[in-house]
Image (cartoon, rainbow, N blue to C red; front, side):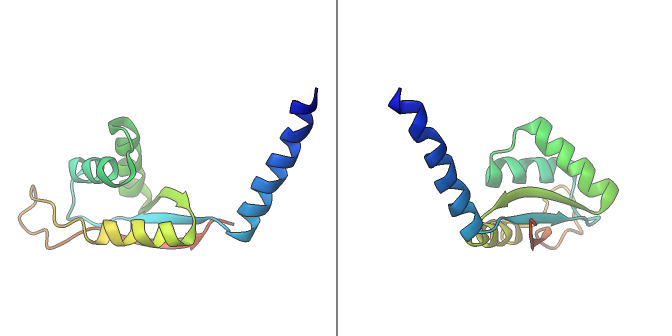
Length: 108
């Protein structure tokens, strides 16, 4: 019987930890120099998103101009944004000069 009584305490600790470190969104921004294939490959490589999720996010970026690709701590969001910026150009598009752009925003 003592097992379940400790469970709420663990959840409270998790909530407090979350409040101390507010979440941030990594937001991928649209451009015309990257293919859906590039976006899908990048999201799989950097975030582990499966192909279908990558396609959905690529379509969202294409139609709305932006998509939240990850929500995490500030430190990890900065790392992921930097990884997007360092991913390199899309080899399928000759005019492509570099990586896609991303920003981080508070999630709340």
